[in-house]
Length: 425
Image 1 (cartoon, rainbow, N blue to C red):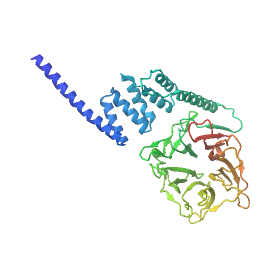
Image 2 (tube, one colour; image 1 turned 90 degrees about the horizontal axis):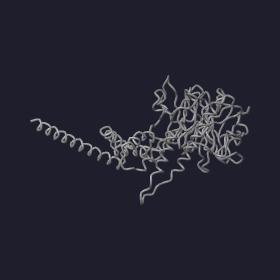
Image 3 (cartoon, rainbow, N blue to C red; image 1 turned 30 degrees about the vertical axis):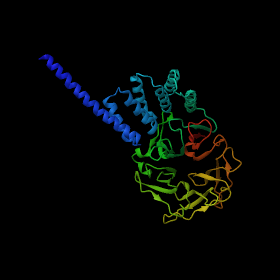
Image 4 (cartoon, rainbow, N blue to C red; image 1 turned 180 degrees about the vertical axis):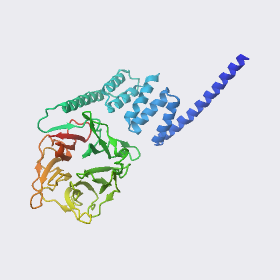
């Protein structure tokens, strides 16, 4: 009788296991099908169920890691699944160490990245299989590690003299464009193309914020995740750039779909975005806007239909709240080249902008012009180094109250295409 009971229990257990295996097979096929047809988020959710059901399954962990790494462009999220796959791997998959190394590097875990790359290099190549060299990755890790240490040491110095420029570091600056830094209360908001959108198949520029704590800038947060500022986001899925704020932080200028918008605060929250009229948004590329400290004037960037060059214009708000017809700034500011990325000092008497006209240090250089007694802008003055470099230096914004400025630059030694820099006076 006891033997029969044991046999029955074994048979019942086998039936249950067989049923569970069939269910997992169905789920796995569904995950693969979603993966293959471009439904990556659906595939991710199914793979996570599979990993939860069989946490030590190499295939489930590895394929989920690859999904995060490539299609979802979230290398940090891929790390725990690559690590789990590595722990249970029976037949060595060399590429796992390569991808894990890149994910560690992206996550600023440079020592772990170098170790993974060395493990990849140490695995003998299989016949007929082409292996990539990871020497450039290892060198990049060492270089980024040194640069990060230099930034941290620079910030610790109490005796900084003269004008010093410091990269905000790889926590803030991504591998792509990080633009238009703006002081907003006790934080910095900026535009970043850090995440790849697999639906639109491109990197989308979106608004983020960072704060300075413990002598370094912290990991950026998308504005959609910030309760009182989420209404600054006009469209969570498409390009947007917040270009300016008034001195009291109660009005913001935003460029969205090549049009200039303004948003005004109502209490602690932001009101409905207002697209400016055709008087302002009169070209196909209305590229940038700078509000005065009080929000009664605005310098805008419009592209000339014929020359395709960018020029600066000024518009003034009338007593009824409407923006008047823009007036092109004089030849002290505008040239036959491009003038772009304006910023008005809080008192409205100094205009900073970038131009690619001849005579500068690099490509786009930062200039300033002062408003004269006749209400015309005076001769443009080139800002000195280290603010200007041999690259493109744009979106300069000066905050005299804290003796700092911020700008974006693609100068040599950065972590991405355009990095954000802090200027300390």
